[in-house]
Length: 435
Image (cartoon, rainbow, N blue to C red; front, side, top):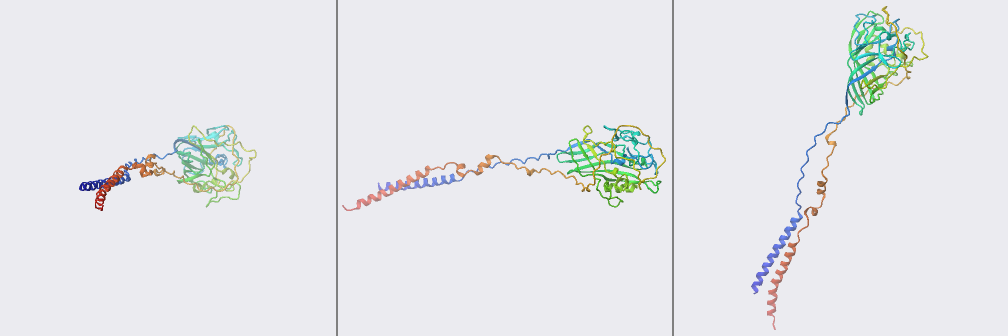
């Protein structure tokens, strides 16, 4: 009997130890979280095209009359300053004036138009020597002008109204003839760039060198691309723009410019430098002449579409203070040619706007700034909320409740084994005690 109890106690002890070990293993297993499935990374999105508000243009219109002097009577009797569409043919010698057969109102996309008092109309040969009311221009100091502009159509380029940028080019030529052609140059293929509220108009100029001292001198001058207008303030509107080129206050270097008068100013340096090669620089800057006021650059307009014109520049009626001032012949006056002058004719009234007083010279036009591209890294993709929450949960929440039954069973068996092992020992001791 004693041996049986010993064997049973040892067996219970071993079983209890095994259950305790099993409980410990279960606890350890419950402490180790089951790794969640690694989320499959989403594919990198293909960057979309950079958003832009740029719009292609193919029918832009440039209108400009240069200045009042270019629509004025010239100092040589019976001659005028005027425009002719296209390239005026080389007369082959100096002192030759334009004929009616040579004059052109339109060539291709370039036309010459005259203000008739209410709107712009195609120019006529007869209207080159009259103001908008049909009255003769009179002397060069009378303040009466023929009010003509040249018009380039079909301009191509790109406009971004949101960014305030514009880039346009035109094809074609207009001839600018002074003294009815005794001196002239050709303005071709103008191009306009606008950015940061400023603009610049360039063009290719060509012409012939002449001389005041020797009117017979006549030689072709190589063409050059120059700046013909700096636009210090450009307000780009939906339909286009109207801007006044810098002139008043502009100082030149290398030219005999008058800087003491009220009308001190000049067209851009590169343009005046080219005119000096033709012998006509003084037409494009203040020189102390009685007509310096009329040399001030006139506003120009650009319509982004021929169907929607921007606010136009319209000549005003002749000033009541305009008078036939007897002024000395300017030093840049060529010797007159006996060729008959254009005949006179009629349309309705207009003339120059009051000019502002001297303005500061403009700063160089800033080159159009390239738009900043959208980088793919600028947009961050957030992971699903369920993935982010799983990373932040405590371990117990991930693994669930820990199992506890092995601990209780093991403890019970160990207690039973102890009782079985102690029971025989205490019985033997009881029998050996004396009675």
